[in-house]
Length: 395
Image 1 (tube, one colour):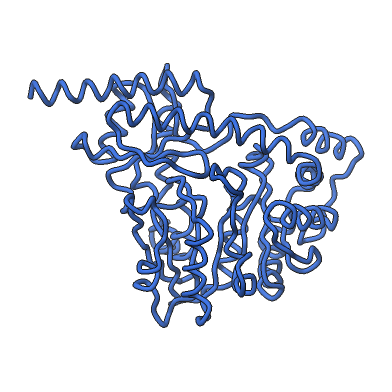
Image 2: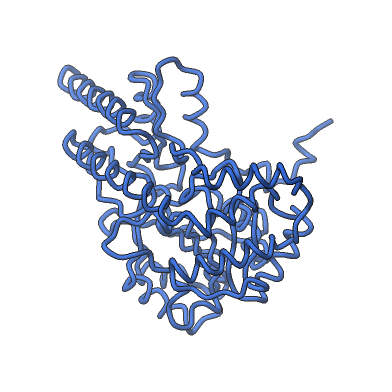
């Protein structure tokens, strides 16, 4: 069989995740410290685990409604109102998905037709561009700049809009940069969009991991924006529930209906046990969110300080659990830096280019790890930088 002629071109041309490349190499090394994967080092809180266990003990193992258990959708609606001031009807404006990634997939496939353009601010999470390509849409990358703290500006947005623009993806707080869009930033973006038919996919999976002086602001909460915005969120980051694969989308009734139809045919429903656990997460665990957020905040400040001290320029991220230092002073490309660091010092970080071409000259370091883990890794990185300086002098 000539499989190269059988596999769909868009699938064949899809790049493998640059995040996993270095993680997989590191997994085969002895004494390697990985700061590469964005997964909380916290265990899922016991209250949540107990709810899942009890649902199994009671034999609650059947399919649920396609859109998710009614009780869970009601709790999500209450959570979105309580935490972010967003109002959604649980019976028509909320879809429970298999992680936030499925919600992103369903949203893009529901809105984007062949030839439609999707504006994607970069560096960003790896899935937006390949999903757009699989639909026949046209990704339009917008390189964000370190001098703007990797925020999307009005000028950058206006330059990317064409008559074919269908969707703007807003990935804030951002993976990999940790960038946050403040209310005034979002208001300026909203002003550009109001007189268009452009929809917004606001990926807010890191909304609870916000280290500003005020809570996260969603673009959906601004005047006139709820009708054109699908908000994607989930349980993986805020509740340390990565393996439970639970996410959700909230948005206009007409869009959620189409997303639910796709979900029915592709997935059926999110895992039942995970949904019972998620009910308790939404209802009882605001305190757990804050406990983990404070710990991440301490690690964030420690990491930024150490990186700047050792000569890797790093702006202060205001969200998520990543820092995105510049490695341009080393004279190495992002891939070269990561590969040499991995083999010389047994520390795995992710090249910025894994998140788009504009990530060149940067690396992503996750602080979803213990402080002792971070200290040991930073000592090795500092030793590596000293080694590079000595090579430069001797060379």
